[in-house]
Each structure stands twice: as structure tokens, then as C-alpha cells.
View (tube, one colour):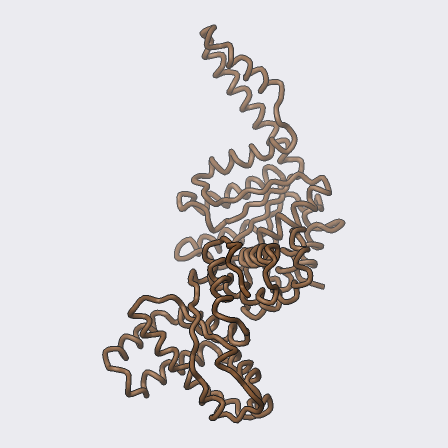
Length: 434
């Protein structure tokens, strides 16, 4: 059974935690990594089930909230709107407001407004006290103007004074310094139940896929798209939605489905790193001589290597990366000689290439700097400093420039069309791939 299914059943199945009146007045926390789909899980799996069970529930994001008073107003407003859209006092106040200026009765209007607000607040409090469930999302994105002690104090008020169940959704390890200490202390005093949200890539992907009926058009390609995402090891609901939306538009426009893997990879890389990689051929024909592959292999005609669109200075770095790619075969031949002999073909070689970790790649990078006498001293220093400051960026170049694209057979014009689509957001009809 999937972890998402277990968590959903625990929270909202028959007699589940959020449906059990014995748990009124308690606070739960749903924590997990950024992008892991916590909000999607609540809005698509939990909230609809609460509505189905006729449980009054309120969802509020703390993002952009500037004060506790603003949050209190929002909670009361949402609670009031659960049952009442407009009452007789509202109608009377509205009618009086329209005629009072001509009668000179402004004080009466003000009095009615206060009476109306008081009536609404009382009704909202009644709704909250009837066992409502209040979800506060984006906890870590609250304004710095809101004190953590005050925020947890209000949460305690909702739970204890209003008899609500309160659910807090936040990213793990978000607070630093003094706020981290306060968070730890008040969390222990306030939170009754803690859940760590950690779905697998497949669980999160399937959850998003089934929640949008429009994706059924991609049923024939669902497995391939999922496999590609699993290759990247990225757990991010927003990225999955962008990938699926791009694949859906690509497919709807009648483009070749065999490029969905490349489209998915480019979409993920652009979303994460905000770069589109260039299409560059690298001459590694010597691989066919150094490692005795069998059969006719037109490696240079089948595979492309991809790099980022860098400025002039960093293009020197690309040249260095090209050189590193050439010496990788020596490393692979030494480290994986038995596997290469067993695979005995270029696809086997490239499969091993994909297994090289970013740490190993950076070590190869460093060895190249130390041992290559053709690199000038000033550039050697530049490269060394660049590597130390940009390890993550170089790791992404390695991951999305070598490992993941290495097995795709794609021509430059095909790659360019896909890149333009991802970068611009527009799929041009007249940009045909033959």
C-alpha cells in the first residue's frame, strides 16, 4: 500500500483522525520537503473527502499575511462563508447605506455596520466551535512581521477555545537562528500529532496524473514520462504538472511522441536551473578504438551532447568540459572494465556513464586541472575557483548535459524545436520536424 494511501486513510477514512470528534481541539502538522506535493495532497485528496463527509473545513495560505489580526479576520470570514452568504442584517445595512446619505443619517449606517460585523463574527465563531477543521498552509512563508509565538498562540486559541482541529502544512527545516529555537519550543507545546510527508516519485506522479482528467490523453505515454522523471530523481509536484502540461500540448498538436522523454528532461532542467542547453557534437570517435566495441557503430551520428548557453568566458569552461568528456572513457575503462566487456556495445557504455556520480565527475574535473599542462595558470586558477563556487551548477551540467541525455537519438533541428517550445512557452505550428 502506498504511503499516500495510508496517510489519506488515517486522516479521512471511516473514523479517521480528522473525522473523529474526540480529536477536536487538537493540532496536527504535515511536514515535508519543498515541492513534495503537500498542498496538492490536502486540496485534492483530503479537502474533497472532508466535504463529502459534511465536515466544515477552511483552507488558508499564510503567504502574504502581514499580521495575526489579518489572519483572524480571514479565518472568521471563511468560516462565515461556509454557511451564510448574506443575512437579513446585511440586507438591511445595504439598503440603509443607499438611502442614508440623502437623509443625513451617517451615524446610523456606522451603527448598522458594527452590528452587522458583530453578528457575522458571532456566526463565524459558532461555525468554528461546531468542530470545524482549519488548515494553515505555507507556514514558513509567513511575513516576518508575524511573531512565531503570537502565531502559535492563535493556533492554540483556534484549537482549544474554538474546539477546532487545526492542520499546519510546512516545509521541513525552514526556520533558522532564533526562530528555529522558538519554533522547536512552541511546536512541542502546541502540536499533538506530527506527520512527515514523503511520497515516492511514482506516488506523487500518479496522484497528480489522476487528479486531472485531461491527462488521460497521455495514457499511452504515461509510463515513459514517469520513467523519465524517475531518472532525474526529482520530487516536485509543480515540475510534474509542467512536464505533463507540456507533453499534453506537444501531443495535442500532433508532434512525434518519441520525443516526450527529451521534452520532459528539457522542461525539468529549465524549471530547476532556468537554462536551456545548447546542442553540441563532441568527437569521441577514439572510443571505438580504445574500447573494442563490436559491430558498426556510428556514434557521432547518433548522439548529441548538450551544454548551457554560456557567456564568452564560460564558453572556455565548456571547452574544458568537452575535454573531460573525452578522458571519461579512460576512467570508465579502468573502473568498469568487466561491465564494458559484458555490454560490449556503445549503449552499455552510456548506461555506465549515467551511473557516474556528480562527486566522481567533480573529482575528474579536479584531476584534469591538476594534470593537463595545456591549461594556462591563470585559467587554471579561474577554473578551480569556478568549480568551488559552482559545484551545484556543474553537477546539473553533468546530470542534464551528459547522463540523462546520453541515450537519446535526436537531431539538432528536433532538439531546437523542443527547446524553443519550453523556453518560450509557445509551440509554433510552422516549425515542423521531418
